Length: 113
Length: 112
Image (cartoon, rainbow over all chains, first blue to last red; front, side, top):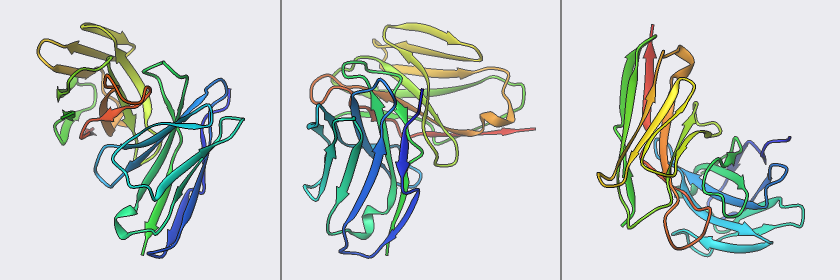
């Protein structure tokens, strides 16, 4: 059983640029959620994808968007990067309707300069 | 609003028992989970309380009281490797299923 893999592990971007982060879900899971974790804080829900559609969104602007593919892997895209977007971006896979036991990836550390 | 509050830091010695509390204000949720995170790595699922009461998983136990809006994680026989951040998390009623609201996090330092 494979876990959740995220790429890249680290990334440095300039303010105003665009970035794409990738996540492969755990085998047997059909739902992918993305979280943003600022230093010293708990993860904040960005959005979730199920059946290749966005299935709920947190308090994040539209420049945060995503995709889910038929193999359940997912991408997070952020346009017009701002300094405050610097954070650890975590991907979690789960089975739709199960409210616990999510499997997280190790995250992508994004630094915006 | 929906928020889960935890103490920011807890310190304990190897072999001891430590309790990490989580108090919450939400309109309702399905249950309370606990996750461990080492040095900003992947959060790892530890325990889940769907109902009030105590759940035991090896050295870790978790408790939930909905009437008191309170839960805790109990770590026994502390080991150095338990030094990490611990988060309570709850999936709220309504909105996206499989969404988690995370607590503020508790940094546990285990000393020899």
